[in-house]
Image (cartoon, rainbow, N blue to C red; front, side, top):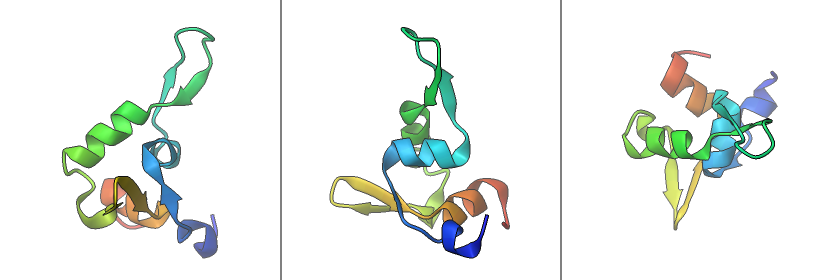
Length: 74
């Protein structure tokens, strides 16, 4: 992934789940969907530290910051 892609702004728990590879199986269709609840839990529990900013009621970050918070250096 290029530096431009790593520094783009992503908004919300769904986008965070997609960036971090958090997926669950949809109960009705059986397909993989982003696990927004798991991503929100990670944010609210403080595991991402300063990687996430709250802008009003929305969450914002970049793929680089999310990955560094979870995996270390990118």
